Length: 366
Ligand SMILES: *Cc1c(COP(=O)(O)O)cnc(C)c1O
Image (spheres, rainbow, N blue to C red):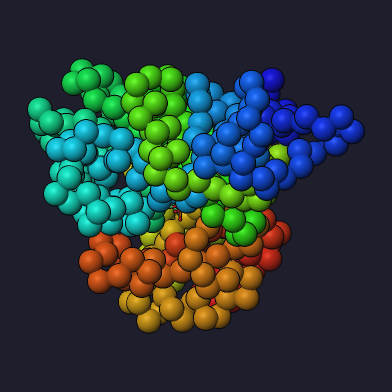
């Protein structure tokens, strides 16, 4: 099956004799005991199972586990590691997960943050207690690209696990498990959900091993599971994911080229531009460059804020991956300890007509 067919037909579980074309929402928290039945919705639910099956297929993994948010999914990996583990994480990464490592797992695990586009630097951070290399590519918000295969090769030499936050690329454009990563993480709140109306996360594994069993245990016993309704919404959204992603990619490509041509713009960060530092690696490991870009404007935070205030079609809001375009001055969201430049605007390029988006950006920059 090709990806468009998987997105529409995989996972669906229909037991009703009326054969509805769409799987109903099973809101029951408990199930009558009988041979092979589900028991309790925190442990299993038909809508969650359908979602997990399609996610595993899309990432070409052995199994998937759905969580109530992307953060909960990431946290399940850190909770499954033996305490005292050392983690290597990128210097540019989703700030909420960075905060988990710094604030929740402080005293439980140790983390070294490193420029992951430099494999020699990654190697130099490996210690006897190192258990995991956390990869995020393209990264949030600087769109830095990490060579997944390069990190995997290094990790294999030292017996380390590799987990990859694949939220920006989506399974449509990048499949880290095929490049040798052990785990993929998604904030399904973003492109997979695609309509800014649900919160969710997922982990997908390459092999159903002992570590995966521990993650399943954290999901079930920890209890950060998505509701049947959110699972339903998400499987519904996934049906159009391949088509939405192509349009997100095309619109972001057009907007990034336009921005690069503007005198008011200092620098554009988009892995689909040949001048981007990660372009060659991105081209080798991604089949599209997705819908996220950032750019810095000449001037400071005030100039950047002024651009936002003049835009008509870009909503001034955080988050990403929805049908509507969003823009934010990222440093303002990340808070005082941010490493993000003050004049950087992060854009989630939506599915509006690209001509309208470019026209709007043109008048806002002028
Ligand atoms: C949003 C996001 C997360 C966190 O996901 P939530 O669903 O908000 O908990 C993790 N990684 C990346 C790259 C994200 O964009």
